[in-house]
Amino acid sequence: MPRRTRPADVLLGGEHIAKTPSIASLLLDPEMLDFPIKDQIRTYESGQGYALRMAFENQLNGLPQIKGWLGKSRYAVLDQADARLLHRWFGADEGALGKALGQTTTGVGYETYTIAGHSLSRSYFINRSYPRVCIQCLSAYGFCACSWDLSLVVACSIHGTLLTDHCPHCQRQLSWHRPGPDACICGCNLSSHANHATEQPSDTPSALEIKFGEWASHAMYRPDTTGEKTCLARQALDGDGLMQFLRGMSLNGGLLFTHALACAAGYGDLETHDRRRPQRPLKKARRSLSSANQVARILSKDWQSIVITERPSVVIHLLADCMAAHMPETDRSLANSLLSTMFFQRRKIGWKSRFPQLSQLELFE
Ligand SMILES: [Zn+2]
Ligand SMILES: [Zn+2]
Image (cartoon, rainbow, N blue to C red; front, top):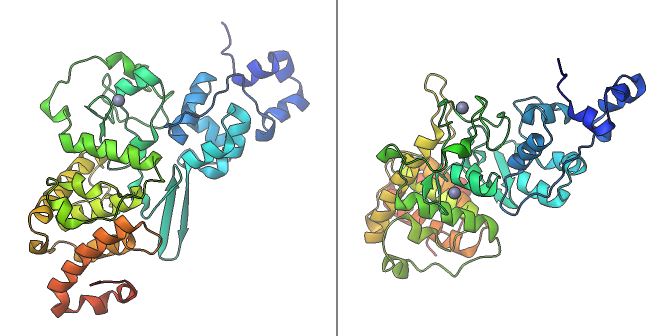
């Protein structure tokens, strides 16, 4: 019975080498590992997606094996600190890979996450546990896009399709622990379903979802786009809905603003983890976008008519972060306008005293 070839054997030329104790011990040293198939990370590729792709190309046992060699548990997320060894093993430019992977920084009262060179104010802006893919993109390009890792991105603007978070064959939730970017643990090639017709109307993305996916991808890879100063009056003439407000905003600012509007509509809490209710992140993201869009439509018709009654403290904190000094002028201006309206409406119940940090912000400019 033929023995399954291990990648380490491929590297070192066969089992006679692997039987030598001194060499075998070297195989356990991550610094000494090397693999025959190498490639650069692609321009729009997810960092974790790159590691998964290279694990598949080199016939490794997916990300769990790579995490083991990196000294991480199978539940940990690859991050910027892993770029050095991944670069050594698979050949990607270390800086580009580290940038794509990003990292989480936590401390007392704060948590930030960077991805693709962007600093995000909430870790739940990134979907790290429930990967979703555009099967047609996988079929055409063979890699996972970094923008798919954003929690609110639910559609592919290239193909106009809804991203999928499950295998079309076995229906199981996709996992980062699948064998390869295009492979399910059931053995199915996801791209073999690329040309199958959409079965249900609910699988068709809305125009908003496609445009949001396009905006997020654009904002992610055009960090130098600071946009022109927001003019609310001009925006109101420019159509209605969420997308008119996001135009010109930074990735972090747009995500903060969208989540703030979704929360204002009583929805959008992507960070809640209730074990009694299985998480359906894709469905929740679609509802968040739809909810944010409803509030945005009201704002575009009559800015002063908005009354935030749902979860005002969460809305205020999201908008306050959008107004932080390091944020671009476009982001700060929009958040400032909405916060000013909220405070004007609520000044009698003393919100300002409940959020002393806001006294430092330039409200009512
Ligand atoms: Zn696509
Ligand atoms: Zn499957």
